[in-house]
Image (tube, rainbow, N blue to C red; front, side, top):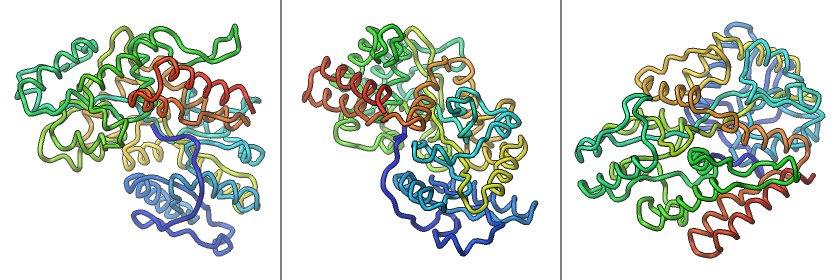
Length: 417
């Protein structure tokens, strides 16, 4: 999953017709300034919604694409100079923004945003609205399965255990030209889903001791992941050398890919050489996924804060929010939203069913905690989870040292300001 603490900053040219960054003084007092970062599909979606808003209200929304890694610094500088954007789509919130964030409680209530992904301050006021839900999931190359004569789950009553899944991909490796059994993105978000599926709670706060720690089931799952890399079931180079997992799957030589919902639009458009499906993820003791997403915020010290709030009110009405989800390929972060995904409908249906059936409360906790804790002034996580796993795979540290590093990162990040 993407890093929640974004870094450094310049503004670059826009994707798919989005306006370029410029002097804010050039915008009229009626103009709403919206900062976004994302791929062409997402950028195009917000640009289209801005166009429709102007057609309906006469108010222009100036959509500025900011590089993902630059958003944090750009907003912080703008906030400090009382030149904040009216609205911004972000992945995290810094404490420097806290005093200037608009109260979005009414919009959240009217739009029925998912409570587990709606960010509130200590007083219970909503400071960030979820724009979308991302979920960890599994894709398979059905041609390789068919070639090897291996069946795969067709409904929720036929879901693999992890042992059954691994047996299936081992058979495919033996009977086809598949290079590996499966591939997993180099991300702690994927590891969390994996540990949940083995019955672990990952790294959580022990209320009795006031410290973050893990459990034996999580440790067993992480050791299992290391073993799968070492025995060639998973290509170790994805984690240790940065080889692109998505490209490997799209080559047609990998039976299965543990990634997430954000891949669906790309695969639907760009995979032409083989047939693929999204399927229910394997589990060992617990069905689970891991959820992330992005957020919408507004700033009181912007040039048109009131206009920004009106735009968000419009965007989060069921009709308009549904349209945004269709354009961007989003899993909805509002209750009761039915999205028409066209040719990709079957894949999105699997993800929505996984969220409904397998999203334990902990599945969205990690993302919500990261945003809420950093907003409150805590240090936040540094990425030690993934980095320590890479070190363990490279035999640079022991397994126990890896666990110690991750627990330390949680305790430093979530107990210290």
